[in-house]
Image 1 (cartoon, rainbow, N blue to C red):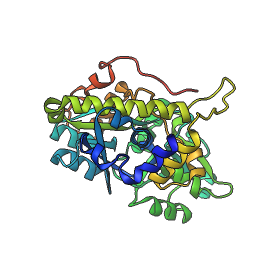
Image 2: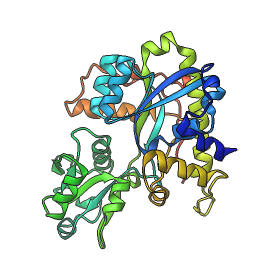
Image 3: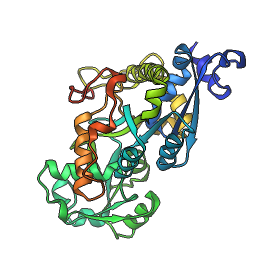
Amino acid sequence: MIRLLLASWAVGLAAAGAAAELQPVRIGLVREASAAPLYIAVAAGRFQAEGLDPRVRFLETEASVSAAVASGEVDIGLSPLSAGFYRYAAAHGFKMIASQASDQSGFPMYALLIGRKGREAGLTDLRGLPGARIGIAETEPGAYYGLFSVASRFGLPPDRIKVVWLKSARHELTALSRGNIDAALLPFATAIRSAGKGDTLLRLSDFALWQQAVVFTAAGNIAARRSLVERFMRAYQHGAADYQLNFLHYDDAGDFIPGPQYDAYLGLIARQARVPAGLLEMTKTYCDRRANLDVADIGRQVKFWQDQGRLDRGIAAADLLDLSFIGEEPGAPQSSAPR
């Protein structure tokens, strides 16, 4: 049955007549593997069970996802967190309603790829961060927050970490090969693919955990079409639970236990994210089984960007959240990743 569902993705997952009876829900996101719970929910018919016709729209950038939600072109967005996202969310009345992915121990999303000159200069572990030149591809990524969370946790002077802003991961890798930077902060999958013999990887999630990406919608959607958002969330939470069952279970010895639909879902996610299945197996991302958000960390992120001068101090994290769809209230304890 599951293979029939997976095969049906390309043709809309439902016959035209049945789809006409379903309420459309338009979902915008950038094509990436961390949206696995959504892919699974769509393929497994979870939205149809809620009377919804999921219309997934892949966009080029996170900014275009936010713009599509603000304009009403899509109902639901998935996006990484950054100062830019928080600014736009506050200006356009967005509410974060669920987790897309978080950087957790055992499920890293970012890593420092340390080059030869960096190692020679003493950047072999966290103690070498002060004085190191770290290449970052964007001006306000969540990974930048993650890097400085690591520094803060271990009492490292953040003003001694020299950030070198570069246009893309490709530019980072070029600068690293030329010795212009000591390490490149990269998505974990990119770091693995790019690491050469003798290169060192430091996974940020080994030292600090944070909420990396979220599911969000406009407050107006919640007010005018709460039922649609509720049904979306029920379907999405089923996808998150299916994802955890098949990808995030480990025994007491730390050995991975693949779920009953592991192979089928692995192929599905690989196709949708356009990532080789073998690489995907090594770079699985984490999402809580109920899609709970790390509310405390979101508060820390907002304060961090405010302290950096990139976010207005009048913006409160609580105003950007609506946790009613996952049955949580601000300050409630959050689930943690399996160890």
